Image (cartoon, rainbow over all chains, first blue to last red):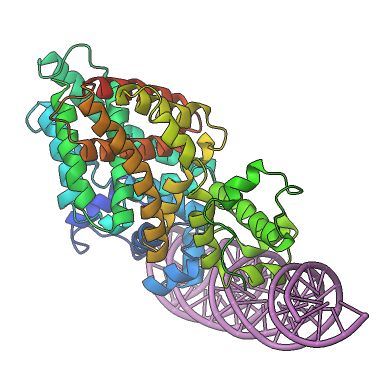
Amino acid sequence: MRGALLFTPYFPLICKYIPIGIFPMSKAAATRLTILQKAFELIYTNGYRTTSIDDIIAQTGVTKGAFYYHFANKDEMGLAVINELLDSSSYATFEAMLQKTGNPVQDIYGLIKYLLMDSEEMVVEYGCPIGNLTQELSSFNRDFADALQRLASHWQKLMEQSIVKGKKAGHIRADVNARQVVYFIVSGYWGIRNYGKMEGNKNSYKIWLKELKNYLAGLQ
Amino acid sequence: MRGALLFTPYFPLICKYIPIGIFPMSKAAATRLTILQKAFELIYTNGYRTTSIDDIIAQTGVTKGAFYYHFANKDEMGLAVINELLDSSSYATFEAMLQKTGNPVQDIYGLIKYLLMDSEEMVVEYGCPIGNLTQELSSFNRDFADALQRLASHWQKLMEQSIVKGKKAGHIRADVNARQVVYFIVSGYWGIRNYGKMEGNKNSYKIWLKELKNYLAGLQ
DNA sequence: AAAAAAACATACCAGTTAGTATGTTTTCAG
DNA sequence: CTGAAAACATACTAACTGGTATGTTTTTTT
């Protein structure tokens, strides 16, 4: 059984942009990546515990022998999805979007509106991948909870920095508690993702975004 | 197979307060109720799809024959949990708490603080029962999504009424959009429940509640 | 080119799953 | 008290579950 992917956690991201011929990804690494990507897709749309290894190998064409060569068991694979796929993807995008104008009121709104309305990786019917996993697995397996918490704190830290900068620049009131605000916004984001799943469309997103705008304006 | 519980959806609630000897609940109705209550408990702590019927009958002592006499299949039982147990329970409490002072800023905060910090039925590790089910089942089964949506709209309507009244009484600004605010608050509530699961304690609840207070104050 | 290790393939297994077939017991109206 | 329906009990099944044992093929090292 192999360790982790080369250059993790950024390797999968790199692979997206560097053609295989030029940057030689070994066939084994490609197999591993295929498993992780397809597993993520299935887990995102169907839940972790209700996605079977048979599902994954059927969808990928990878055999069970290959699967268990790369991963000791299902949970190790699940953790790899979180740590190697989710962790790197979109992190760069977040960072860029949160520094776009330098005013958190606009940047945070812009990021969240993008995530809800424009991002192609997230589907309203299936909610937020990280939120889903947190909900399903936090009380089931501490390793998952820890991995997800590290992921979430990335989010939080970036957003918090944006607010702190905004305070210094005078865009945000001095008495605003950045950490507190981040909890409030991210919670709302997770919650409205749940609403969207329930209603099966983006109407609730639009309503929520309007009030988010009001709330952010109130921080000025 | 029997229909639903007598006098649903309030029958289970009534049963809590009326001793069996006085208000004669048939043994069959008691069996059905036992199944629903234990099933809810297991589903709340473990998820719907990952709770097996064998789990339920093992925990209740009810046999499989009895289970399938009362419910045609697992999903019918799951829907009964939502429609007959969750629907009635706590509805009265909500209504009372939301009319306590007549000022939504205080009443809504009071209700949500109660739900997060004091309610004994909800455990931080397991999140919000309705939120959990919504997240797990909305995209899996439309019937569940619909049942949950009806449940959630109860919540919403009560809270919306509280705000509308508060506007008339001058506690809330006239330009505040009640429906929008409700979406914002309930989303935040669901989200912070998820945070709590992830972190495994109520620290995030406290932080979030502080910002909820700020947000509500901003509506005045 | 040969040996060794890595990567994969196949067949299998014991436990669990929702659900059924076929009973027996309880309840209750007449 | 009796018969029929309601309520429950037991044993079973076919499909699926994560995981293993034991191979073969491919890649890498020497």
